[in-house]
Length: 251
Picture 1 (tube, rainbow, N blue to C red):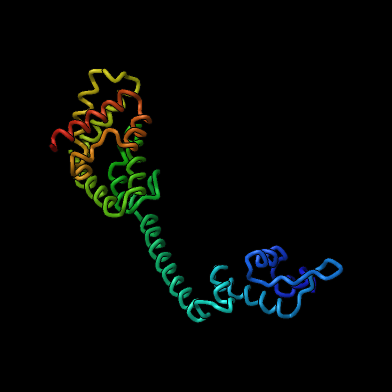
Picture 2: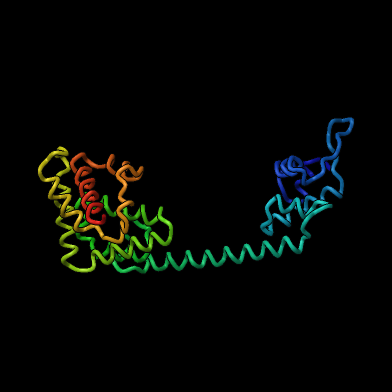
């Protein structure tokens, strides 16, 4: 059989056959005098086994272990490991579907920053009226980013702290005041006298649990620098001063 005939018999592509040759999975016959390689039944048997193993979900490195004469693992052991891995994937898929279902069923619908956790979605729904503020919308984007980027424990602490800080109508009103003051600074200079008031009100809105230690308020932090660069100068200065106020209170 020529390579095309072999591939057709087994139900794979000629490209796959050449790839298996390259990886050393399928022996490559010598060329005959006419320049063509002639494949025999043994090649078809091995190629069919490779196809069956890959269809079961084995990676090509695992297929090599199964096919090798000195394999460290026999087929039963490899398939057992594959079964265990598939079971873990099934569990992960069930958890992901449960999270998706919770997001789809969340009261208030999916936030614009979504998908986020159901807990954060609920917080966003409770302060949806603040999203008319450009600074509030940016804040929500940053919170959604942090929830994705933080380790699980820190993420839960952040969402819990924000929930506690916004747990009353008065707290939500103070947050609205802070956002309004920051929005008013969008075209101002860093030395604008309104910056100090905005910083003071903002500091009073930041949940203590977000920065449990003063050392965490590092103005040279790369994320903070990127955050400042994304803000107009006066707003960035107000945030800097607010963090300095918090750092001073916690020393």
